[in-house]
Length: 77
Image 1: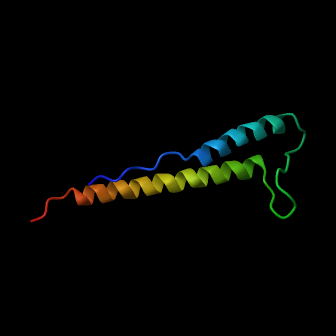
Image 2: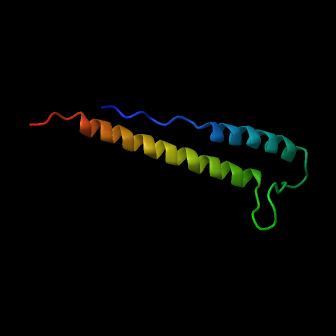
Image 3: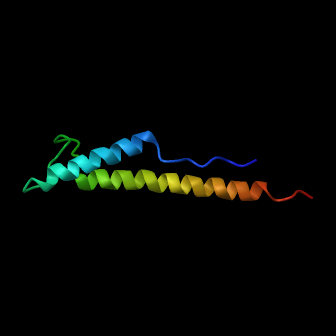
């Protein structure tokens, strides 16, 4: 049985779209804009890091699925 790899989720795609908008707005400002609040800041740098973390975890998950597929494909004796 082959496991199905995870693809990029709609939430990540939406986050990337928002990030692009944040970068446009930040490009017009002299200092980086905090899109969060004082307790939970959200800047372009932090948003980029969060998206990269999610994509890294998805990649690791897909690698684990591939390894499981390879183990499952071994013939039994």
